[in-house]
Length: 87
Image (cartoon, rainbow, N blue to C red):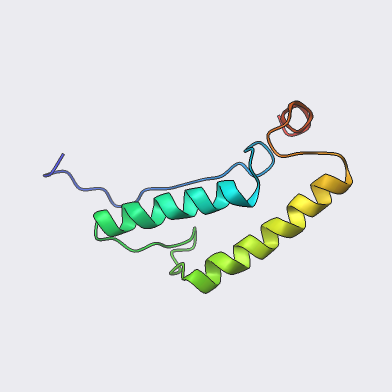
């Protein structure tokens, strides 16, 4: 493995299907930060733009809106109903 080259590593969060809401996002972001540090890499978005803490906060705010809209419709991320609706 030490001699292999990896050009990118992607972390994704299936928002409606992942239980835990913002806490799940925070865990994925922390894991991505850890990998970036250990691999001496940069944390970037899908457009290869640097993901700063401010950018992660923006995403967190956007997710709060999505989770609020889901809650208004009786959908809890990761719940059986959310899994059926977003399958």
